[in-house]
Length: 505
Image 1 (tube, one colour):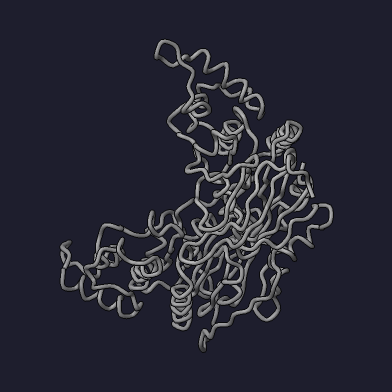
Image 2 (cartoon, rainbow, N blue to C red):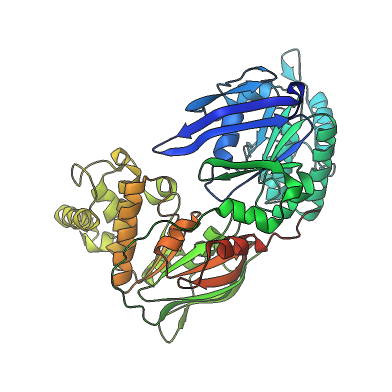
């Protein structure tokens, strides 16, 4: 057991629940000068626990202590004032401000009530030098930097001032090899200064390179906290998986026919590289991968939302190449994309169910360019009944619906167009278990109608529950495709990590 004075922050019986528990009874102590690897599958609770420690989320159960005193920061700023910092996957920079202004926002040096620009530049250059950004002008707008440099600015900002606990959530996902080397050097420097570091990454070799201990989360539970040297990468994968799929669902009788979507050598930069697969009529084809694996980017290429550097998309049997320069062209060819961001990209939250469903079907509900209100209402009523959308009526505002019913509205819009290829990006994200099974039933019905479905999900067990085949992406490449009758959960997860093996400095 470590001496009490070696523990800088501890959590005891910490839990977090939204619609359902996502963290339960977590006990963990962070030691000074140590790197603790926090490992687990997508959705295991790693980011939630980190956000609680960093003051971004309050726990719903348990207690925390910082330097032996009760700790419950009301905000990220309150945690940072105590020296608890977090670098998140999502960048938290203001793109219209300069690098220097972003680094010292909230603590800008001043003279006689004005910002001391000369002093600001000196301070910024010192902070930037720590992470290898000496060649960047501190007056450069953040929006002019590449995503890797922006990540380094975010890291540099977290290293300014007193830092006792530093949480790094997938910090190297967007960094070059040189930037990773510089980051590792800073981590070693911080260790020598006694900073406790929580390091989250799906790059297992990085964890083994940096961490002294590993904490494994699975389904919101803390499975173990052990010295890192006790486990190989394969053993860590087994700990993260932990158990076989314990659920089953009857998708009904389906006839899987000939391929109607063919993706051949599709690629864009480093995010998607030379991906090929086919999806047959009546088939549920899953795409799994870790954060940054290229899943969403691949769907956007198929849908024409981004331009491919290489490869082609073909439809029908025999395959007919289609040039998809825009989503509008994809829709005309019978391809639909149900985005993972239903609130930002899929719905008009302030509008009615009727208006949202009609949005993708204006030609069917208008005459001579004028919307036919009766036809619009009739379409909405048909889709509400078909999708079993729980609402007070077609005129109910979408923002008043539950997450699951909002997702059904998005699906209803596209299904009214009779698209033959449907791309689903995280179709059950943020909805409760009951609503998830409603969505599974709808996906199965679409497959029974002979449509080809591609489903991206961060929940591997979900894909194993509903899919006929699963393709696994890792670092932009399709590593392998697994058949329902032969796949194993540990094989699928190992494939997801395959592209990151041996990537540590």
